[in-house]
Length: 468
Ligand code: FAD
Image (cartoon, rainbow, N blue to C red; front, side, top):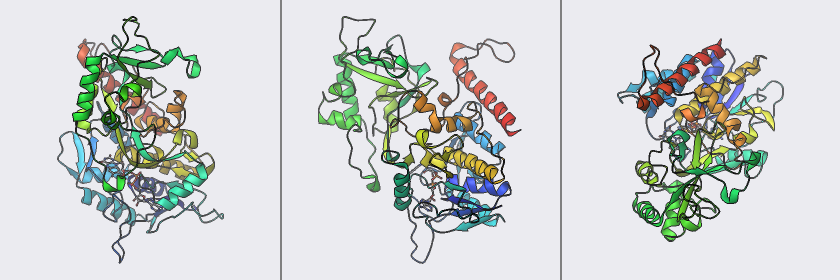
């Protein structure tokens, strides 16, 4: 076979290269970080020339496949012979239920296994633009771009030129996302502002949480007092319109939010139609399944620890469970729902596949997971027997669904796509079981947990069927 080219030897690219080589297809892995005479290691976050370097935490998060979606993703990846999971297991350090690793041992192991594989060639170079044109024998007809959140500027510019204005983001501006089932609909209600119909004729597209003056004032106090995370020096970005963190708005004046994302106009509380709310927080559906809802305009730099506490002050969200918290940080990612097909190929140039954080997944494990799938897709194409993605009931399939369209189908339109960790809200829902396998009644408060387990079991069974 002609080789497949993988650009970027991070979490995603290393896994992709491994999967390609393991399927018997040669692979050339291009990684720009090198420990040369200058000692220059060229990103703002990486500190070594090791493959799959973990730039921040040393944790792959929960390893519990029964009750935690990232643990489920671990289990699925292990089934598929993941290099990242295997090296992580080998270099595990004690961390309770989490899978944490000795980061140097882990990265050295990934580098060693790839270097020693007879079908892997590692080239230390930057691909500083679109990959060269294919000539029938150089293999550039089948390329995986896995250059991560800190994609080198030259390549990022080339992707931007190819995809067009607005299709490549350089920052996350993330509002918190909440599991629908944790929203108290006895307090909140559904209505679009001025009952305006949204896509699909829905005049009740939003969930609204009302506040009286006292609640609003207390909320503003909490926003102002809460500890904020500071940008690292290299994250020193100017804010842009429509993207101001809520606490920055609150700092500009106590009323600013009430005239911005929390304005109460055009909405009537059906339970109290005569009393005008002082402020209203709106939630917008975030996935096609309707299981996840984002807080409109609530991007924030509040530290994660206080976010949940602060947002649970909002009436209707007292027991909110967060699928992800808000944030604002540097991150290069493409508008995948518009640009990629279901096998993660760029529609405009199908020789290019994208994998990892640059596709709009978030996290080490999710990035490696997308590397795993693209590696398999690329190798299958090279062998002339293309394969489909795993079903959306699996964690792997649910991530593909998220980055290739789940959002747009929800009617949010382009521009609303934001990176996300794996979570059960991305998988098609199941009824919470009332009895266990032995027919014993499950107490109400344990049913959510039991449901997660059923979803995990379904995922692993469906993955087995896909593999077969
Ligand atoms: P990377 O692992 O970054 O790999 C991309 C590789 O491509 C790099 O090795 C880079 O040198 C190379 N490259 C870039 N451009 C080129 C080019 N033109 N030619 C050749 N090579 C190129 N996730 C977590 O789960 N936990 C965390 O604690 C965490 N902390 C983070 C902290 C920071 C500062 C950042 C930026 C991200 C963090 N993430 C974290 C998010 C994300 O999961 C990781 O960045 C993860 O490494 C992404 O995997 P990846 O393979 O997509 O990218």
